[in-house]
Image 1 (cartoon, one colour):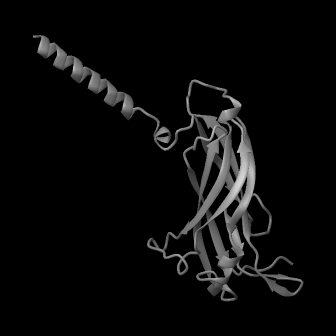
Image 2 (image 1 turned 120 degrees about the vertical axis):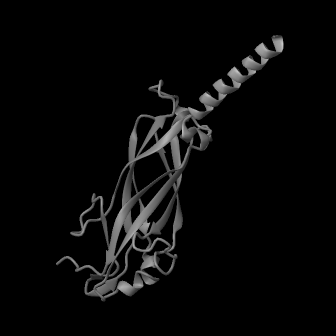
Image 3 (image 1 turned 135 degrees about the vertical axis):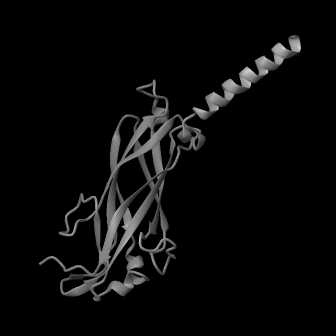
Length: 201
């Protein structure tokens, strides 16, 4: 009888542990910090040359003072920091997040197996350093498409030919809290239309 009760007790404990583990926040599995990073918004340049567009238009070559010019395409991300624990509304200074790296990669919906340097530009990383305090948000600018990518396939082929390529630019933001604990990376994307667009008059 004692053995049967002991077996039932062990089964009950194991079942409880399994339920608890299945209910864990997935973000916690990727982080040893009590903080998390959230991307609220990403914007870039619109077709008319203004900023704050949620769809980016990348002009592969522009005329500046009558001469062709190749420039970076920049974007801005609004990032927010929160505590992982849902029952806490404030944290210590050590739970603020330092964002230290942004990775950029590209995909195309019309080419599921797109090859870098042929179908899409090469991905790249950029080191950054800015703080997002718990409960606050920060807007930060970064390079979305490097000017060097416009001198390589597939963008260089768009010079003067009237064709358009639609990319999805995928951004992954990395960071750590002020105690040095890594937070879970967060990934988002924005659509980018690439062509030799007409230059503003």
